[in-house]
Structures are given as structure tokens and as C-alpha cells.
Image (cartoon, rainbow, N blue to C red; front, side, top):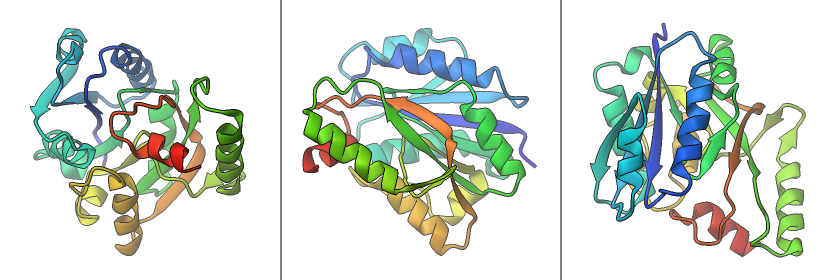
Length: 222
């Protein structure tokens, strides 16, 4: 039985975008009946990210010196699940993203229906740094992965699963890119019930100087 939610947010030099991320998580947390523990993983930060996280009410923080999003997510998950994996819903987003108000409520709804892993979709808040051809290519490719309310996309900025499912899938791999997809592939291989829902939504940044490189790298490839 789930008794709590833990949200892990890796952050590397995110003083500009972290406040909006935490505001959105605060709103989403207010719409669920379970207590929500938000944990910011400060990864090699040199700006004011740590100060912002420290000033945010109800937000925990840990520091790592990995400069690696897979290691940062794994460290956050370990801290968030310590001694409580069996009763925790673990949700993941990114510091440059803003979850929708019903983000956690939709994940819990799917969990109550039997989902052990939930993957959501992302929408880009500003395409101004990219040429129109890249935007069109991205949207066309993204639509091909959507079937009604179901989809086949995986984003570390929009992912949730039970603590037990996280352990059975082997946790986040210590890789700089693709740790989210590796986790979901392992969950499928382990026979866990993975549900992709377009109702679980996150607004994310499409900046060219992305801190982790995954999304920006994909856009550059397009």
C-alpha cells in the first residue's frame, strides 16, 4: 500500500528555472491525499541553485559531485526510498521542467489501477532557439509515438514508479544520457506493468545548452 510520494529532481546550475519547477511541484503536491517529499539533488552546482533549494519550504536536498544525471537520479532515489521502498511512489522530473497541476494525481490514479511504472509526455515551452524544420521534425516524430491516451515515449522529466518496481528494475544506471530509457526497458524485461499516458504531462525547456544533454542532443540530431 502506498503511503507517501517522493519526487526526485536532479539539478546542475539551475538557479533560473528551479524556482518555477518547485512552484509547480508544490501545486501538484497539494492535489493528492498522500504526503509528498521533494528531494533536489544538487550535482556540482556553482551558481545559486543550492540557495534556492534551501529556501524552498518542505524541500530536502542532497549534494553529489558526479556531473552525471544517471548518478544524480540514482543518488536521489536511494535517499528518497531509504527504508520505505515498499510504501513509496517515486516520481522523477527535471529542474528545467514544470509539472502540470494534476501530475501526481494522474500517476496515483494509474497506480491504483495497477500500473507499476508510469511514463508521461512532455511539451516544450519555447521553441525560439530552434529552426522551424527542427520543430516540425520533432512534432512529427513525437506524434507517431502517440496512440490516443497511450504513448511509447520515455522522459526522465516525466516518470513515476513504485519503490518496489524501481528496485526490481535495478535502479537508474550511472550514465550521462539514457538512464530513463534504460530503467524502463529493464522494467519491461522484469515483467512490470508499464503504462504510458498522455494525461501525465510536463512542460519542459528546449534550450540548446541543456545541462544533461539528452533532449538537446536529440533535437540536434533531428
